[in-house]
Amino acid sequence: MAITQSLADFHASLAQCNSLIASAHRLDAVGSNLFPQRDREQITVAAFLNLFIAWEEFLEASITDFMMGDATMTGTNPVRFVAPLNRDHSNKMIVHTQRYFDYSNHENIRRVAKLYFSSGYPFETPVISINAELAELKTIRNACAHLSSTTRTALESLSTRILGQPQPGISVYQLLMTIDPRVPGNATTVYAAYRDKLSAAATLIAQG
Image (cartoon, rainbow, N blue to C red; front, side, top):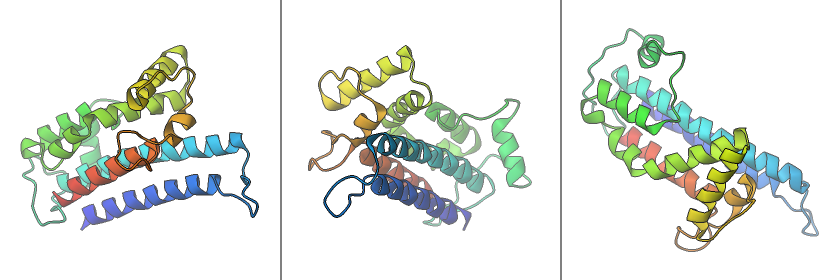
C-alpha cells in the first residue's frame, strides 16, 4: 500500500531530524558540548527545515497516493473525483497551470483535497486540527530562510504568544529549543511539540 510507505518515509525523516538535533547537543565525558554554539544552532535550524520539507513531501505523496486510488491504512477508499493515468499525471493535475504548488499553504491543501476528494477526506479534519500550528511553522520557516525586519517581528510575536511574555531578539534556535509551556509536563521543546503535531496529523491522514 503506497500510503503506508509514504507515512513510513515521513516518520523516517522525523527520526533523522531528531538524530541531527541530538547529535548536535552531545556532551563529552566531562559534560562539555562537543559542538560549538554556532554549530548547534545551525544544525538545529537545518533539522527544523528538514522537518518542514518532510511534511510537504508527505502531503504531496499522500495526495498522489489517494488520487491513484489507494485506500487508507484502515481500508477506506476516499471517494475521488479524478482518475490520473499515473503519479506524474496526478502531480501535473495538482500543479495545473501554475509553476509549482505551495504545499506549505494549508489552505491550498484543503482546497485541492476538496476539489479531488469527497468532503476533502482524509485531509480536511487533520489539517484543520493543526491550522494554527501550520501557520506558526511557516512563520518560523520564513525566519530561517531570510531574517528581515518583517520576519523578525513575526518571529518575536509568535514567540511572545507561545511563551507568554515579550521575546525581543529571540532567534529561531532559541525558540525551538525552549520548553513549550502549552504542553503538559514541562519537558517538551517547541520543536518537539510541532514535530509531534505533524506526526499525529500525518498518521490520521494515512489511517483515514
